[in-house]
Image 1 (cartoon, rainbow, N blue to C red):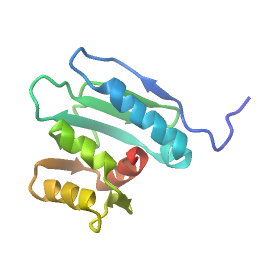
Image 2 (tube, one colour):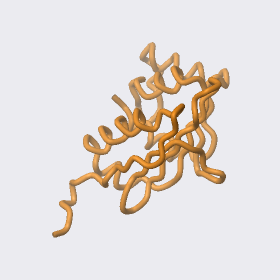
Image 3 (cartoon, one colour):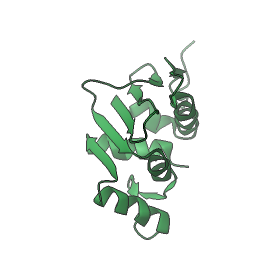
Amino acid sequence: MAEAPSAPPPVRLGAVADDGVAATLFALVERGAAQRPGLARGLRGRVTFRFDEAGIAPARLAFGPDEIRVEDGAWEDGDLVISGRLPHIVHLTTAPLVAGVPRPTDARGRAALGRVARRELRIDGDRGLARRLLRLLEL
């Protein structure tokens, strides 16, 4: 039987490292896919999260036509890299958004934008994918 058009793609947890955060990221992605299935189905690309703190493994996401995979590790040639301190990356996902960008009229949005402007939080690669990913992860 075919999946209902409104069903989100399956989110799978792949390889996990002892010093990784993939399981936590998996929960955020799974929640976002359930809340925004159309957005989740339309995402394509490979994303790496790199953390400035020593001892935290990078995490990666693969958005494909049949599933979303979340695991610890980094892509050699991904489409998007988000890097910075773990708390700054978490705050980015909790900032209210407008058009997939932190809302400048909200204190949390201004704080996230300031971190990006100061390069404390770096978003390199496909900016469209970044905006759609932030909408997916938005709490």
